[in-house]
Length: 195
Length: 195
DNA sequence: GTCTATAATGGGATAGAC
DNA sequence: GTCTATCCCATTATAGAC
Image (cartoon, rainbow over all chains, first blue to last red; front, side, top):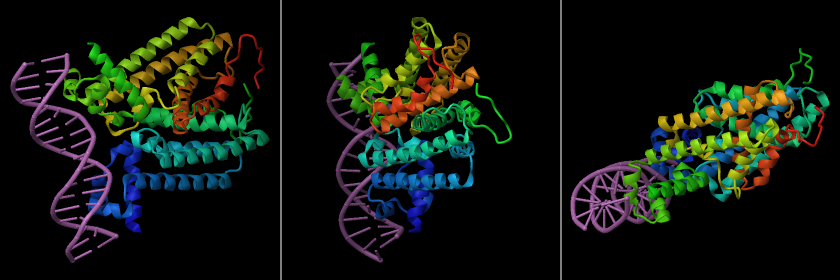
């Protein structure tokens, strides 16, 4: 079972860097230290591996979101932490969110994988909608009109910001793309006035 | 020269649907009606083709932006038309902006292609910054604080919205992801009050 | 500029021994 | 569960005739 996890770890790292087509069983085998034929014992086909990859990522990500809800009181702080999840995922500017990386490429169009991808999106939007509804009550976020619309826009913004920053291999571009979003998050010590 | 254009057209269509790795010289050859060896006469390597692809796309897109500036007077109308460029590019929900499609995948990391991709981003941000500066003067867009920040956020939003909508094969998700953005664009006949 | 023919490589996958 | 060995296929790319 530990080999299986090592394979997923290795595959995720490369997939987030070079995309789904960016790694081969040969790469995985070299990285993990077994022969490529042995991989088929854990994942009969590459599609099986891809599905496990996305499912594991979505589960882990969802758990992080729930943790964020507990750790931060205000909606602004939760959204700030959410943004940092995407920011940190970029790492040195080369790693995308797995679901962004998988959203391009020919094989990502396979139905089971697309389903898992959409489940990730649905879960994210649900969590964000809750946060923006909280924001309307606690007033910590500016210009919230429609919680769900803001949720969907936020998800798209994070994914797009990653894409742009990765193309330039420059995390600072993520910050600049999300600066307007961050400006909407009021600080506890500040008493900002809506423009 | 006409064959070269037909090759680019075919490659662009498939690349925007299935990504850079989603098409082969064999696919192109079948589509255009020549043998795959003949393609190498026009594009010695696939990387050459990819570069030509992005450069042509960026040039064409930039021309469309300039046209938009002329056809629409208010910043709101220009941004609305800009959003529709990305919306229409989605077509039936399967075609991405070429630069979004190329932003994932192993070979898109080749330096010349990344340069072209970043040129596209730079040009887009420059155009959008101009528009948001116009918006501050004509007052047709709500909540403009920093023109460049808004420009970068808008670009990221469009790219992310395409990604999400494509995963679900549903153009409506693009509209929902950009609904909050669209709500900031005031109509000539309306006299909206900032929230 | 296009063709046939053919490299040369690397991909995912399988059979069967251990 | 991992191995060796092998298969089959698709890929990009090249050589040289027409």
